[in-house]
Image (cartoon, rainbow, N blue to C red; front, top):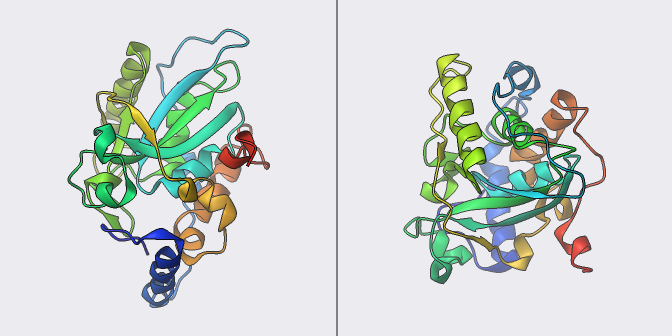
Length: 243
């Protein structure tokens, strides 16, 4: 289980993940699927214009632990890259342990590069709200607590901000969720890639307790709710870097 102040390196991470087994063993029922609820979430009424062939766009989304958010978007058609990192703070504090203090302004985020002729920004947000995160949780996501786990969108241009703000208003006005959407759009102050050992973490550790409990159900929901956008083979950071 990930905590506000996270462990040093993979060894300590493994210890924390081991703690998750004991914590979640108390639950008699398996982690529930959100597929039915996710299917009921409407897409945005307002979206960005259709893109031109051969172009790419970038989106930066924060929805709790970046392991799961990255893993989801690595399986979305039209996405050419999904990189875990930090957004909302300065370059000087964009380090895992520092961000883990919750005092840097950073949120664990994912930078998504996509082909707007295959998937739109609005569709990425639809996946975000329906599958990747619980937008009603303030400064936390599941077992992870702190402002670094907040739900936020960092628009890369004016159109993205308009689409995001309109969609949040649409969801709140329709009372789609049992509680208000607390996701907010924030000023883009730069994206800073996370340490290498965080990249492709879900793909590399699908049976780790934290991933199996919190994130693998998101992939199942993506496959069920967005079959037209789901692809089985993920686009990996290490593969794109030749690693």
